[in-house]
View 1 (tube, one colour):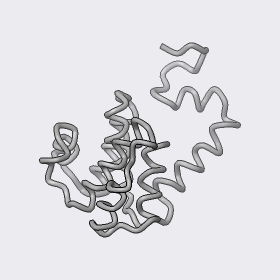
View 2 (cartoon, one colour):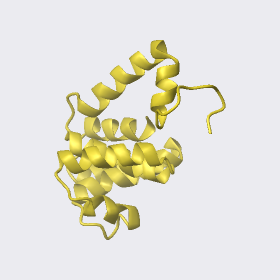
View 3 (cartoon, rainbow, N blue to C red):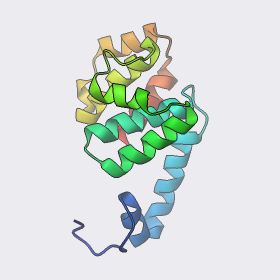
Amino acid sequence: MPHISVPQGLPGITGLMAFRPDTARPLSEFAEQLMRGPSPLSQGERELIAARVSDGNDCHFCMSSHAAAARHALPDDGSLFAAICVDIDTAPLSERMRALLTIADKVRVGGRTVTADDNAAARAAGHDDEAIHDAVLVAAA
């Protein structure tokens, strides 16, 4: 339940964005750049990271919207996202993606929980600093 009066019928963050369009505009522009702008990560990979983090945050609206975008962009029938929600260690992921999801999970809890070993694993899986940066920013946002 919202603690301020927001427009009725708008799910998740969309009600807050409708309440203050002036603050919503830069947030929307940032999200568009982060999720669809140039990156070594595909749009589907970024959406999968966002869906995983949103699931960990128990945010059904964000999880559902990011999971749907990931299914469309990857493509995936939903089984990949379902598998990573159960256990990323056994999910049918590349080591490349697993390394970023491990970092994203830690960022969700607190950025300082990411270790040098986590970053080294991501680099060993083929990621550069830009990819790690983008994964961290998607998870933090």
